[in-house]
Length: 182
Image (cartoon, rainbow, N blue to C red):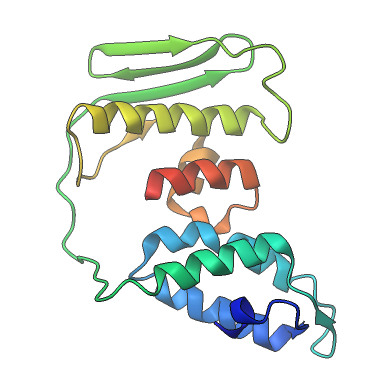
């Protein structure tokens, strides 16, 4: 990626679009890369036409450096075999007044949200994403991995965003889903 080696150079819309298109294609194998696409996609939308040049912002450089490091891993692979279903009864919920909670089979946990939690872009969607992360952490700590599961949640947009993580423009939620996909 020549942008990483020469970041101060201005880039055109076509150059950025080529990089984004390549990265989108590569996410077939590097699925964790989906969370590293929204910033570049958003940056691409800032070009008013093909003649304008822009310097690459710091946040985009951070994402491009991640791609550069990731793509140096030799012999990547991704199994196309479907994961076996994990038959668990998983429920998650968040409430701005009460807090967050998870129920997995017959085990549960709940946490209160601290005063001032809804700042710096953190909203109910963020709280729902955090409770999904806590459910994943619980599952991993109990030895569950490499399986397909259903998570019941009343916030369908958060659940859909988890599976369509490349489309998320909410930076805070994207950070959480990035940690879950790794």
